[in-house]
Image 1 (spheres, rainbow, N blue to C red):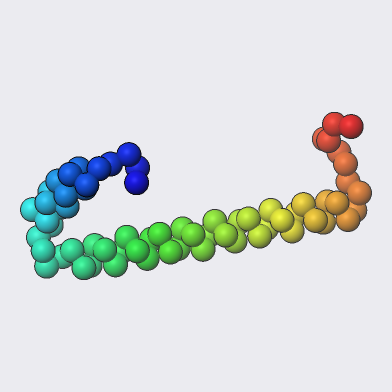
Image 2: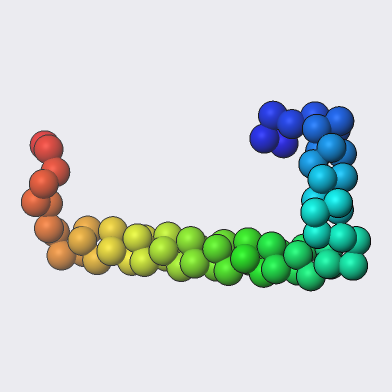
Length: 68
């Protein structure tokens, strides 16, 4: 995962615990999880828009900008 080994992940976790304290870790994890969820929802919406634009372009026969 991201080119990090187990040792590096443990060191990062220890640093996070020292900086933020063990009591705030659930709040931080929840915030990160919600951020990732919102990001995925936004990007999936964009891909749906992209597919809609592609299909409407194909239906109208608009071939401008395409090389033949």
